[in-house]
Image (tube, rainbow, N blue to C red; front, side, top):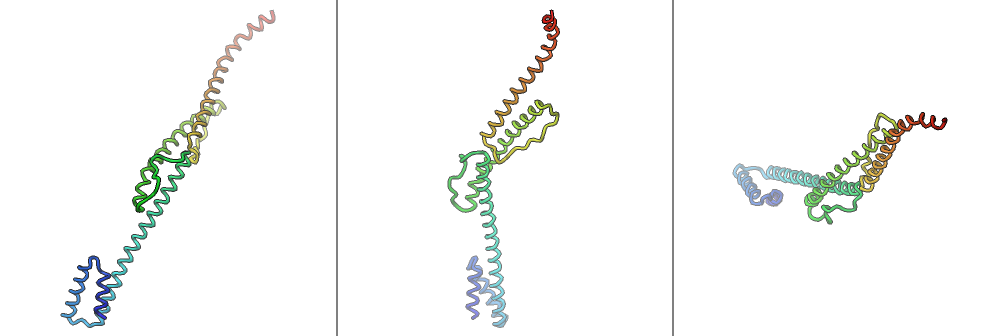
Length: 204
């Protein structure tokens, strides 16, 4: 029974096997020299086996937790990448991995550069939208005679080039309207100053 227990414990501690086997043999020699009772040997070997299993279990749990975290990180990265494509109105991206292969770490490493580039592209596009919409709001307020401008809120769900062009077109329209209104304001005093002369000639 003791030899079976020793063999089982040796297999449990086989990292590396030669070291664990040597230590168990040394322990047996000490027990033989001391005169350790058989039931006490069984108890100690059983404790060693349980401790060994606990160590393995902790390592397995730690590895499984890492796997769960990588799966979650990969899923979040893929979801964010898809949302960025939709937000920017693009069907694909040159740096987008066509097919995810390899280990979880390799897959995560393959999508990370493309994701970071898409995030920078979104920030640049968001800046364009903010600048154009702020200018639209400013000119619209001037035309309407409002002194205070409302806070510009950009819809980050639609940062497509088509939507940006719509805002740019609106900006150009407002600029033309502003120029037209300014011309009318300049001409009105001039016309008013000539009205008495016109009335004089008409009445004469």
